Image 1 (cartoon, rainbow, N blue to C red):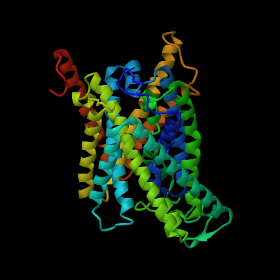
Image 2 (spheres, one colour; image 1 turned 180 degrees about the horizontal axis):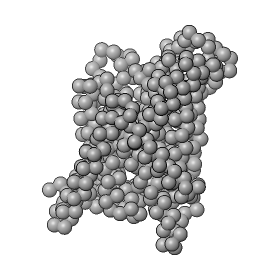
Image 3 (cartoon, helix red, strand yellow; image 1 turned 60 degrees about the horizontal axis):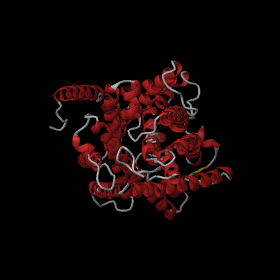
Image 4 (spheres, rainbow, N blue to C red; image 1 turned 90 degrees about the horizontal axis):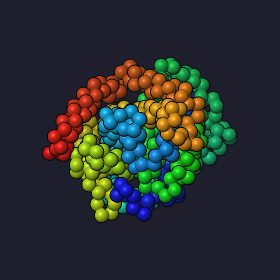
Length: 459
């Protein structure tokens, strides 16, 4: 069935449920958790729990908005409705910044994973091959995207579940591995639960927020989902237990199975655990799965930004090329624009391979914070409008509103304010904020002047 936006309802309940799960399991966990454990120690689990709670409130805010108005433009449409056209413009481009730099981080991660097997193969070339693969998938059809994401997500879920079962068994039986013993003792050994102090735990929240990015993808898929009003609430409600089990549970077990000192930024912590078990084949299997996780995220990034850029192009807020949609009902213009930035990321990785991942995730997290903040503000405005009788509030609502909304916004503000006090890579991202603000402000002025003369944005 074709929609008014030119898309087709090609995604079913099975695929949307898995897209929701896939969005809740990404490379931020599969790769990033290793470096964060090394920096913050076992107390990292507190950061995951706090950020996970905020992520849940964001998803419930998104759910309420989607039930009010399902749209492939997602929060860009909601920002325009409840905050004004300037907010739609700013949030749309910041979301694009999020995924553009997330894609760079994912490609970097793929290169790192493949380097375990082929250390002498050019890593930049690995990233380029990975990009070409997901680009072809996105340009072919929505149905192919959904089917691929279904199997990518299935592999990720199976991998996490396998780890949880193995880790629980190791802890329950006090198995000796890695020169120590798995168990609760690892949570307080090696300088205690806060080995490097509580401030480091606070500083880790930026990277944890990045780890939770993409959970909002299920809202973007609403415009191409059959029976969205029935499917989307179920998908969103499942996010909280996925966060609790897959993220908080995994990080807690990682800290219990091996001492936090065993982990590092250069290898997936899950691969580290299976390698310590003396089962190289298991480590190889896990490494293959984390590669699919990174590919999945790149795949999702091209999918989501293609739809967002097209929604903006239709309103004259992005180059007209971004609004082009092919005979396969795929917005190829926006997809190709994002892919071109991914290529620039490959160049960045070629010159600074040791810092590319951290810089990319730090900049991407600014887009995540903006996106989440926009959803929370839109839900607050929706609630206010409903209170005035201007619209009917959906029955699927954000719990604890408006207090949970304002509290979550304050939390996100704290995450950004802490960035310059963390490492050098986060400082780079923080000092990009004025540049991003200036760029968006200049873009908005250009859009205004073009509209007044009736000139397309890319002329």
